[in-house]
Amino acid sequence: MTTKATEALPISVQNVTKTYGPVNALDDVSLEVKSGEFLTLLGPSGSGKTTLLMVLAGFTRPDCGSLKFGDDEVIRKPPHLRDVGMTFQSYALFPHMTVAGNVGYPLRLRKRPKDEIADRVERALETVQLGGYGDRRIDQLSGGQKQRVAVARAIVFEPRILLMDEPLSALDKKLRDQMQIELRHLHEQLGMTTVYVTHDQREALTMSDRIAVVNHGRIMQLSTPRDLYERPANRFVADFIGESTFLPVTRDGKEVRYGEKALRYSGDLPETPDLQLMIRPERVLLSEDGPVEGANNFSATASDVVYQGDSFLLHARLQDGQQIVMRGAVRGNRATSLPAVGDQVTLTMATEDTVLIDGREV
Ligand code: ADP
Ligand code: MG
Image (tube, rainbow, N blue to C red; front, side, top):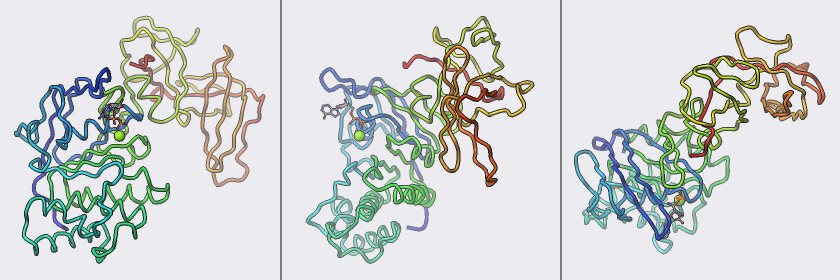
C-alpha cells in the first residue's frame, strides 16, 4: 500500500437531523468534505461527533437529510456497501481472533479470495508498522499496537473514505503525539478523504486541513486551524480552541471602545448585542518602554506571575478591575527579567491581533 488508494471521494452532508427522544444529537447539519481532505470534528463530549460519524458510516440512520459520496446518494446503503473504513472509539477489535483475523475481517465480509486476503492483510500491517504481527493475539498487544491494528482493519480494503473516532484518546501523551504525526503521514500516503473525531483541540490543530467545531449537534464554525484560532466566529469557538480572556466593549458604527479607549482592530465586526475583545495570552506583549505607537496599550498591575520554564504567565489587573492574562517568552538568556507582583506594566496588542468576537455562546 505505498501507492495512493483509488481516487478519493468528496462527502456532502445536507440538512441531517438525528434525535434521540428529546435530545437533538444532530441538528440540521450540513457539511462538505473535499476529496482527499483531512477534516476533523472537534467538540466536547456529547456534542454529536460520534453520531455524525455513524451516519457517515451507515450504522445510524438519520431522521432526515441527505448524504452523498461523490454523486451517489448513500443514505439508504448499508455500511459494507459504502466504501468506508472506520475505527471506533473503543477499537472494537475481536479479542478471540488473531491480528490477521481482525485485519482480514472486512475482506472476508466482502468475500475476497483467501490468498488476496493474506496478501492485503500483510500489506496493511506493514503500512501501520506491524509487519509480521499477524499471528499475535489481540490481548498480547499494547494500547498503541491495538490502535494500529484498528487502523489496518479500516484501510485494508482500500476504502475511499476513512472515518476515525477518537483513535488516540486511550493512549498516553507521548504515544499520542507520535501517532498524530504517523496518522497524518498515513493520510498523505493513502490520500483517502478522512473525517477524524477528537475532543482535543491541540490534536485537531496539529492534524487537520480543516476543523468543524461541533456543539449541541450543530456546526459552530468550519475553517482552517489558523482561521479558527485567529478568527473564531463566537465565544464558544474562542473558548474551546486555545485560551483567552475577554473584555466587554461598546460599539458605535465602526468605532469600538473599551471604556474610554478607542481600539484599533482588524477584521470584520460581528453583528451582535454582545461584542467582546478576545485576548490570546501570547498575542499580548509586555512593553518595557511604555505605550507603543500604533498599537492598543493597556496599563495594568501585575497580580500574579507564574514561571513555566519555556514561558511565563502574567495575570494583570486593569484599572477597572478586569483581568488580562498574557504569556511571555523566557529566552535562552538567564537574565530575562520577569515582572513582579504589584509592578505597574504596559501591555500592548498589535492591531492585527486585536480581534472582536460575538460574545454569545450561540
Ligand atoms: P460525542 O461523540 O460528541 O460525545 P454522541 O454523538 O455520542 O456525542 O452523542 C450526542 C448526543 O446524543 C448525546 O447527548 C448522547 O447522549 C445522545 N446519544 C447518542 N447515541 C444515543 C443512543 N443510541 N441513544 C440515546 N441517546 C444517544
Ligand atoms: Mg463520541
